[in-house]
Image (cartoon, rainbow, N blue to C red; front, side, top):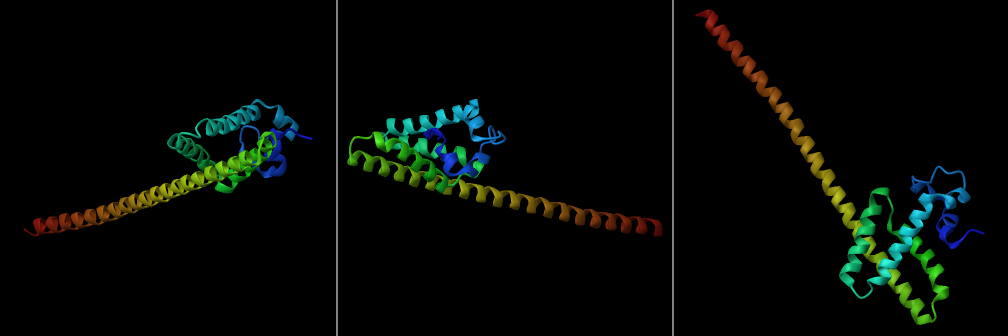
Length: 170
């Protein structure tokens, strides 16, 4: 049986391929022994700790969650991926919590975190779309400039040819 730190990969083995630092390792045992896995597990625990430490500071908590979403967005990590990780964290943490109220509060916290992450990922997607539209527009303008520049050159050449013909006929 693997420790709780590998539940994400035992429950969702396809997630291993998202981690370039250890996706090529032959099996879960070698992944667990790798420094890359241990470092990522510590970052995950650190993120959960940061969330807990900032429960009383909504603006800081929101910024932490946004940063987390922004860091994971380029890798194609989506809201449901975060939800799965948070569910696994909840399953690991809830047995040590003393009351049902505390467990319910943790569940609500993770649900709220998922909502903030969702909104942030949507913003990242929108920024990406806007950037693509902007680049496409720039490319289109460049092509039009090249095309119109070529037409202007042709017109100038024709005018020069006409001027030369007039000069020859004089």
